Length: 275
Length: 275
Image 1 (spheres, rainbow over the protein chains, first blue to last red):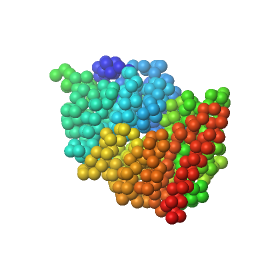
Image 2: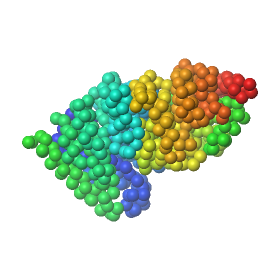
Image 3: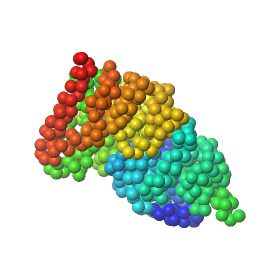
Image 4: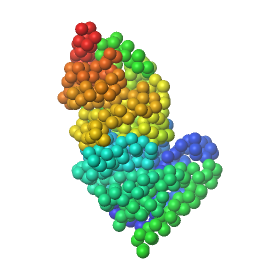
């Protein structure tokens, strides 16, 4: 997907919500477990109920991989369904992959070609030749981990590497990579005030922001420090939408929760673009 | 597998060779493509021919993931075969995974439980709570990327973080993680002289060393700077063994190549343990 199509979709839906499809057999409504493919059945119901309120879906690959072959099959079916019925939706493989050269190309092919994702999350530790192979794919996007929202982010990411925080060095160095115009970044919302400094380094790039809501970040702060003229934000919510109800009304309640966030986003978009 | 079993196997076979199962349909002998599962057929032949010369097999997961469901099936079959027929062999999922908390636990379950690998490679960027979930599994080992053998290693890993190279900070910090006795480390052989300083930080831990041979590292140097009283080394070779012949004699020639490396290793082991 081209960035302008994502931006158009954001403007049309007045939403920059990404729904994280972290589908867990222990948390989905019990009646679905009788289905032939409970994970796909759950995902399909969530997608059908929430697609008008969001612009992206993000399956975390670990949730599927944990179930072995049946898990991968559910993931493939979810992607086929999304791409066939909702091609306007941006898809993110939250895979946090990264390897060297040709091996990275294999991961890129697995997600960009075999499963037709629009984007994938990537870890920066191995540097240039682990990231650039992903950047060769036209109209596909690579979302580099910069500043994550977990406690372990303070182990290395926020420590100073040659005078500036490692995550800033990652942002700056990645701008020199071939195909860097196809980069987006993961930036945790629990550190929204960091967004101001991040925007000085990457003023235009899209940011994927986890950790609003349950993990404590504020949507207002994220918008205040992170919004660009093309919005430039995708804010993720997973559990708060997926598991808001464990009953037969799970999809309906998921839609209510997604709409609540969409309304907040609409309010923020109006504040920045209409005032 | 317990470390002492790995060490006993190294002593018995006089080898610390790890064979990287980077199985590529474009490189395997053409006659195998007629098989119902060419990847498994190739792996089985390689394993049957080389197992007496090596102590570990390391499938790089990207090679399997790239083929979608059939690739995952080939990987599962390979692991079932290895664990049933060669349970004394140490297995490494070269997955370079890493996520937060419960999500990391899912990756751990996928590889340690669903596929019964002895170990997995992990990237350190997200810190403590991305690594510790893997360390909870008894008799399973987590191989943390420290210093990789690719060009991009110089982007961040060798740069100074708070006064010392990032990879050294990773080594030191990881020693404070709960369950750190189950850690091993990836250290590229192209920087064998770094091994001396690495051994000052982690004097006993096993190191997984890629990049000997084709990528230019020297086995003698790796042993000189990296060997411990329990050997403490697994040295990987992939393409040099797998694709030494593209003919019907591929497995036989792979065995010849593996034996050549084993003999070199035997020579090194004698130098350190008999002199």
